[in-house]
Amino acid sequence: MSTDLPEFSADICARLREALSRTGYSPDGVLDTLGGAANAALGRGEPELADRASRDAGELGTLIRLFLLGEAEPRDAVAAALKPLSIDDALAAGLLKGGDSVQGHGERLRAGLDLRPHGDDEGTWWVLSDLDAELLGHPVGEDHVLGVGHASLNLIRATTRRKVGSLLDLGTGNGVQALHATRHADRVTATDLSKRALALAAATFRLNELDVELLQGEWFAPVARRRFDQIVCNPPFVVGPPRVDYTYRDSGLAGDDASALVVRQLPGFLNDGGVGQLLASWLHVDGEDWADRVARWLPAATDAWFVQRDIADPGLYVGTWLRDAGIDPRSPEGRVKSAAWLDWFDENKVDGVGFGFVTLRRAGGKTPTVVCEDLRQAYDDPLGAEAGGWLDRVSWLRDNGSSLLDVRFQVPPTVLLESVGEPGDEGWRTTIRRLHRTDGPGWQHEVDELASRLLAGCQGALPLEDLIELLAAAQGVSAEELTAAALPVVRELVRHGMLVPAER
Figure 1 (cartoon, rainbow, N blue to C red):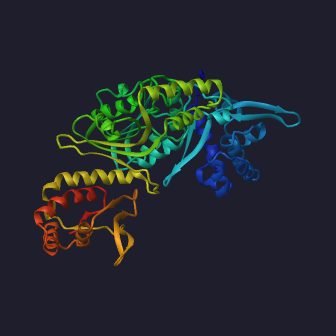
Figure 2 (cartoon, rainbow, N blue to C red):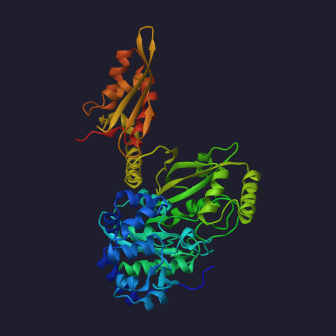
């Protein structure tokens, strides 16, 4: 367990910021130096191409090898790259640590912390966190502060970025969610149970000249009796026995109770209409529908969208998280931990572990909408914009649900109808008709022939009621029966942005 907390004063951060800016230590600077192939290889954990590409990059190359590759660099080269921050101050802050002395080459230094450039379309930040197990060469400590990993990046992409007055980053870790929040929130509050996480987050905010309120405490206790316009949370959502091996992933609660706790309590800390978004895990238990399980977590008057992105086999799940902490599943320690974890899964009839995103909205006195759905297909567009659109469409349906027949609908140009046919006695016979939205998360809906004909008429000219009556007359069916069948389909397509009200 780490005992010395990093200490980054305003003066140290100012000098470090000057050095990083001067050398071009930014996402674009690193990419331009390494090139696409070497940068991609580095992301896969293959450093050799990046090492070679950095050798002719001067001081920026030194920083790349020091902080991104974990290599020991000559003291003089590090001093030049970090100037005006002195080596002594960098060592005292914990940014650097002593390395091995090489005969004839003098002292070499290594990174004491992970210092990583991170950015968005508007600019660059730097994020401080602990070195991972691979660079440490041994398992991480209990109070390890995770860097910007895939889960963090996924939550960043899944968060809506609409202007808000106040935002809470619950369990901030290294502070990366709060960094992005400062782009669209007037006031940002970040909390964490870990003193080490708060120290590193404070250093990250100071390094980037950002004013973020930091509070220590468990779950929502630091912000009791407060409410926010938006809450983001990347909680310790790893499921299994009730223990805490690592504070960044383990809650001490059994199973998926950590995710359940956040979902249950979060809406109570939102202003009316406020939005919460989090990563979560849930158990797939034999004989139980996962959607029923997570829906039971919800408090009253809460709109909720549960999106399942993956389902992990218990054995694969355990091995993945052991390796994440630097523990070889083949080692004696790994075998003991694996056995206890898998025994718990067996005892609780766990078939798999679901993972995904949850979007919540405090609906006030309105009737809430709760949707649980799979979204395991690959897609490129960030989910955050889609989550905002989903909330808008849910509100529209709530306000207009009783008058859908009066609405003039149209199918957006991004929605296509795909047909699958099979050969028959009279030529090709269509067996599947599938609507496919080509933007966002690529929603797909299978429709029958009547639905496809109804949607073909949705061009913004006639209200839905007229289209149904015309189709019913053409097909010789009851307009009332066709209406009853069509309205649930229309609602679902509206919710997924595949049918929209025509502009007037």
